[in-house]
Length: 364
Ligand code: ATP
Ligand code: MG
Image (cartoon, rainbow, N blue to C red):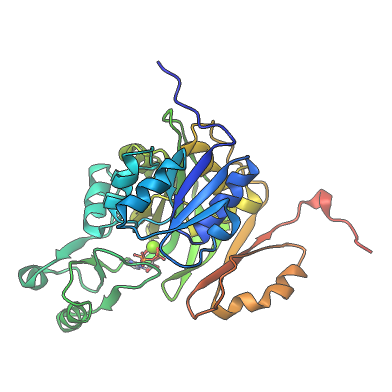
């Protein structure tokens, strides 16, 4: 068996996408001695701010992508809606990890659900709504109508109760390719984040318990106070997914736990995930470092919880409270450096870490 090719510290990692996930990846990479080059279409990039370099280019500019790829040793992406063609263009020059298949699957909700089924991962009942005939045949009511492509933070979705609201919602979503998912009466939501290395080794971070507000992740708590069997199923689904995708890198799987304890997959993201931000402050290895390790062919790091924690997203104006968090000894503040605090925008997060009993000392 040949040893997988290691991309050593000192090498350059290319990141497609310029948001906070790229930013935190670049910070973790720098700590291990790597340089990062960020590629994104925007004039300014908060990932580029902390990287060795920033290339502004469109995702359909294959010449610019080729030039970018030639300057790096390995490429990853920080969001799953990078056009497939952009990844293929990069792949002609350098390895792209986690690769094309994960985004091909993750970019389309119907394909994603079908892929889960092939791996024995359960989902809510669903039906495709791509045309009038499928609209007429759809029965998963009450449900959520979701566009197959380009939904995030609850955008491109509508709750529907009956046929009339279903038909109105499909009109409102522009009669685009959609899927109708039965509404799951869940007890809670959880996520599994799994790293898979170049040699096929896998590690699943401890399962996070997630609370959403207005369709956006609000908090993640770890350890999740759930039955061992539920946690084991969530982990098994995450591992099956990483293996099934044959991916090198990270994949996050969001799941529902129903009232009777059944675990159902919602969606996946082949990249670091908001519900894994707690790992920066309360886990032996952060999800960002784990991604760097995986794509560079390094051994994966340990995933032990170092302290119970609760991550809270700072959305819009909430980030203006930074002084309060800095004054709280249990709070670890992360601000993303975004210029304007638009409503619904993720501006930062704070992880509340339970202090270890032995480290509680008077500061006076
Ligand atoms: P994000 O990018 O934040 O993950 P998204 O736009 O991709 O969001 P989903 O993950 O599909 O959207 O849904 C967002 C939230 O809406 C879920 O976390 C859950 O709280 C709720 N939700 C989605 N689908 C269902 C369902 N079938 N039944 C009940 N609740 C649901
Ligand atoms: Mg989601």
